[in-house]
Image (cartoon, rainbow, N blue to C red; front, side, top):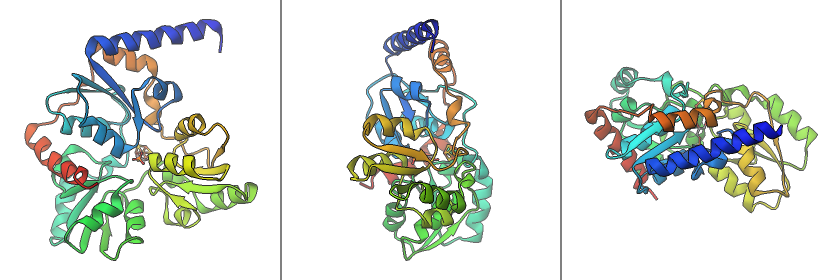
Amino acid sequence: MGAATANNLDELRDKILKLKKDLNAVIMAHNYQRPEVQDIADFVGDSLELARKATQLDVEVIVFCAVHFMAESAAILNPTRTVLLAESTAGCPMADMIDADDLKEWRKRYPKATVVCYVNTTAAVKAESDICCTSANAVKVVESVPNDEILFIPDQNLGHYVSTKTKKRIISYPGYCITHARLNARQVIMAKQAHPDAKVVVHPECTAEVIELADAVFSTSQMAKYIKESKAKKFLIGTEEGLVHRLKKENPDKTFYVISRALMCPNMKRTTLEGLAQTMELKRNVIVIPEDIRLRAQRALDRMLAIA
Ligand code: 13P
Ligand code: SF4
């Protein structure tokens, strides 16, 4: 990087820090964000941690460097605060695979089922659901509901993973993450052959064939914890490559190989420091949710957060 670029970056960082002070804001970033975005954030975490943290902040503005549903969850939980999404076009294709009308149709098909919705959904879908979950607590949430029949939306891979950990009947909606779906068993097998002493750690959004080959299956922050505590020195990573920045920072003595170069979520990468600064300067991309939807969506999120 040239000196001029470094100076510009420093100026940009200073500008963001000043805006943060002026707005009385906090910057939250998901584990998949670009390194420089993670580094300027006050808090970096997985979906569950970000949602939980959003309920514990004493600020006027929450700026989200992530995808839309994550900022929306913060807005659902914080009706009196302003929530800004750093990059307005950052969505989650999986969250867009189901809308409230689709869910109403599925409810008609399975009228006795409890609807557990992955947090990767819109507020309108959460509003039609009984309880939310994230990849960090999906099994716990399913076990917590007093019903043996679960309609799990929208991630069929996470739904399938949960079904292997519970005796309950899981009916999965056929959504999926287009990024994690790009990882296949052959790539994992080849990576294992190349690095036989490495542990394979994957996200439950991966397909069942990939999960079967893994040593550990975790949410992004659970992966970070597992790797920090592990005695192993090498890890094959089966999730979006942005997590590796955090893993390297926290484990300078360990080596990480992202199993496929296709493990890159273009939506997570849309947020840049420039875009973040502009969003804060203009106070744009405010998340607005109709109050009747917000209240019903909050019920589903609150039920999840009540589970330890
Ligand atoms: P985590 O909650 O594990 O961070 O996952 C969020 C996500 O979108 C994974 O693709
Ligand atoms: Fe959505 Fe997949 Fe990107 Fe996560 S990695 S935000 S599930 S598209």
